[in-house]
Length: 479
Ligand code: FAD
Image (cartoon, rainbow, N blue to C red; front, side, top):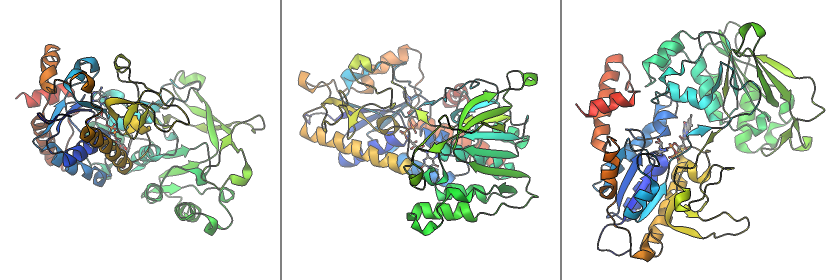
């Protein structure tokens, strides 16, 4: 790119993917100007609204994001919903490059009967509720109406949900969980949580830390797992899986006096959510079909697959006053992607790309697909909604590397072949956004909201009391 003006990059999304991309690009090119767009008035994506409140240390990455945001060439545009408040076509002429880092805002459904019964929740919605994401305060899960909970799935989100349901609410009071959630959790009647998986313990997506935390919860018993699901000699397993197996095999079924229980149930696939006729459209039980290893000789391997087939014995029915579907998040195409001929793979929920460079199409067997100049993706919308913040950081760094290389070669920026973009960035679209009545928030505005949250939290003896209403956030920044 010609050097008479700074390189302008728009990043859509202010989660880890957006921030790690921004910080790396700015570190390599300190004159690069970055405009980060975020549809909420405040930053940080799932670090604020996904990571469990009782894991505050995971949120330390925010310190690094703060440092990035304080750099003079970084600008935050909160409360701007790209694709709605401003179209991509309106944005494009004013940037040299655009990076999509808008995460995964939907969740996957099971597609089985009864999924819309009262009491069947998406784990994503529940997580959003207990983390104070605006618009979720009214979820009011039926915690005070029954004791048996089934979580469908055994990944980290499923285990976060189980832990929150089984934790002592007084422990949660010290976290940044909003008061409305604490109030309802304090009245919870939940005493049994089962996390159910289609495969066996040797294929589980969980980490030893996550399992240990659950097993060690005070006043919660842990149901012993069938020994046949593990190899006779655990030493034959690779180290990480051996440690998990040892923990699961050795864990005691703790005192009968424990008021609550947790179990991991394996080789079960849900086939329907059911209500008793007396409870009409309220969930009361779930029917499962047993699954089998497709090849029983591989049952201790991490990649073993299972299926449900005709030989399945009679269905298994578990009582459930609530169920949480936790089988993964899903990205959606941003409105207007197709206007710019940007592809979206609906099967994987990703924007096809090679090392973060968005490609016209993903052709199996072709290593280098033709990249769309100046269009990039990072994070969950780039690689799919799996992996922790560290893996998101790595893939954001790889995207930043591609952006920097293309910037240095000057070959493939947006509109380059037509003489370059206007380079105006936000200044080029400000009138359009304001014309729609949008009150854009700045980093200073976020700082003000942050201060008020901390003040309110201090009075309650916690780190912060989150503001969970966008209108209230905007009133705070306007006073
Ligand atoms: P996100 O963090 O989702 O950020 C995307 C951002 O884009 C959001 O702020 C969103 O509001 C914004 N956006 C969306 N659409 C638009 C639009 N149209 N215009 C403008 N902005 C938009 N990882 C760990 O390391 N440890 C954990 O303990 C952990 N716990 C987790 C718990 C849960 C429940 C979940 C779901 C994830 C957890 N993760 C954890 C994973 C981690 O959160 C992700 O790896 C990471 O947040 C993905 O980053 P991202 O930037 O791609 O997406």
